[in-house]
Length: 460
Picture 1 (cartoon, rainbow, N blue to C red):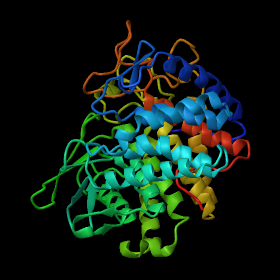
Picture 2 (cartoon, helix red, strand yellow; picture 1 turned 135 degrees about the vertical axis):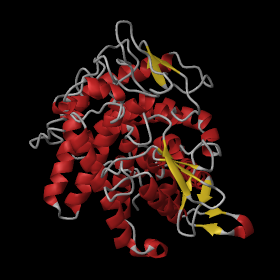
Picture 3 (spheres, helix red, strand yellow; picture 1 turned 90 degrees about the horizontal axis):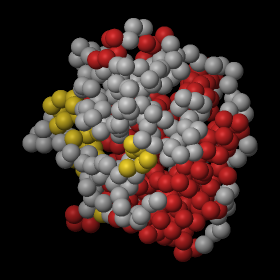
Picture 4 (cartoon, one colour; picture 1 turned 30 degrees about the vertical axis):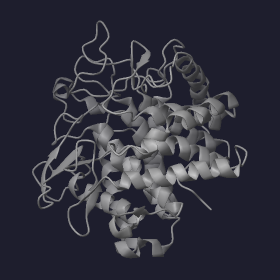
C-alpha cells in the first residue's frame, strides 16, 4: 500500500524537478545527435540506447513533445526550434493516420503543446502558424473519432489497431485529441453530410470503457474488484454484444496491467478538469453535465483507490497485479518496489502516468471544496513523483539516453531487455515513460514557480 507523505508540496519537489530537467537536456541532445529523420520513432532503450521497435509509430510525438516540454520548463530555445521543425517535417502522417487510436499521444504532445505555448505568450504569436496548429488539431481529433464502432444507440468506442472488435483502455488518455478538436469548433463529417459531435463521441467512448474495461466491485464476475482495469474488451460486431475481457500487454484479462490502469486514471482525471470549464449546454445530448461529472468521479475514485492499495509503499507498481512471480516475493506491497528483483519487473512509466492522474484528480476535488480526499490523492501523486525523481529511477548517467529507468514495454512478447546477471527486465527506459516524467515534472515545476497550471485543453 502506498505510504503517502502528507507534508509534500510542489515547492518541496522543486529541486528534484530542476535536476530532472537538467539531466533531461543531455538525454534529448544525445538522442537527437544520432537521429536520422525517417528512421523510425524511438520506442525503448537497449543497453541505454534508444531503439525503434513497435507495432506502430505511436511514440514519435512523445519524442518531439519532450523537446517542447524541455523548452517550456527551461526557456531554452535550442530545444524549441528543432521540435517545431520536426513537427512540421515529420508529424503530418500522424494527423491523417487512419490505422491507430494514438492521435492524442502523437499530436496533442506536439501540435497541442505548441499551440498552448503560443496562446500563453511563451512563443511569438503568428496568425498562420497558429492556424496551422489549429488545423492539425481539428483534423487529428476527427480522424481518431472516425475509427468508430457503434454497439448500441447510446454506446460506442474508438477501436484499437487490433480492429473494430477491440476497445483498449489506453485510448482514454488519447481522447484529448477529440476534446481539443471539439473546443476548436470542429466536427467530423459523415455520410449525407452528417455532422458528428466529437464531444458526444468522447463521452460515448468513455462510458463504454467504464462499463466494460473498469470494475466497480458490484459482482459483475468473480474477478470484479473495485478499481481493477482490463486492458481490452472484445465485442461481437454482428450484434454489438460484449464477449470477453482481453489483454495485449498484461498478464491476463483477470488481473490489472498497471500501465493500462494508469492511462485510465490520468485520462478520466484530466477530462474532469476539462469538463469543469465547459458550459452545461455541451452535455445536453448526454444526460446533463452533473450526470457526466458524477460518473467520471465514480471512475476516478475507484481506480485511484485501487492504485493506493495495490502498489508498493512508494507507489511504483510491478507491471501487472497478477504477474505470477509476485507470489514468490512475500508481502511485496508492504515495502518499496524492487526493480532489481529476480521475479517480476516494475513499470516506472505506469507510475509517472498515474502520479499525474492522482495530482489532477486531487486538484479537481479541491476545486470543488472536497479538501480531505483532494489532499489525499494530490499528496499521493506527489509522493510517487518524489520517488520517481530520484535514484534508482532517475537516470543520472549521461551516457544513458533514457530519463526514467525501469520502464517495461511488452512483457508477454519478451521485447524488454534483460541485462546480464538479471532475471527480469530492468535499467531501461521508454519514450512514453520519459515524456510523462517530463510532463509530471513540468506540472509540479509550474505550480512551484507560480506559472499557469499545466493542462492539455484550451482556455479562451
